[in-house]
Length: 68
Image (tube, rainbow, N blue to C red; front, side, top):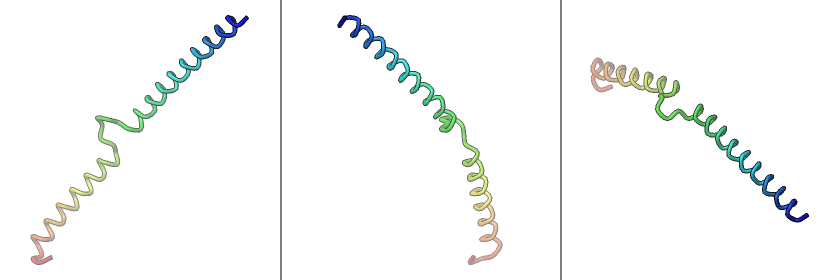
């Protein structure tokens, strides 16, 4: 009887381990969507565009109006 109990517990532990591994795999897939490693995000593109425009405008104003 105790052998059946231990066999049953081992099977349950295997199922829990597989479930945990699947959960980790799904989490990594979801995080890959939210944290792209090699792609520039839209926010970064907009930020870079605004910063570049600001630097260009600031350089133009400083060259156009001395002392500003």
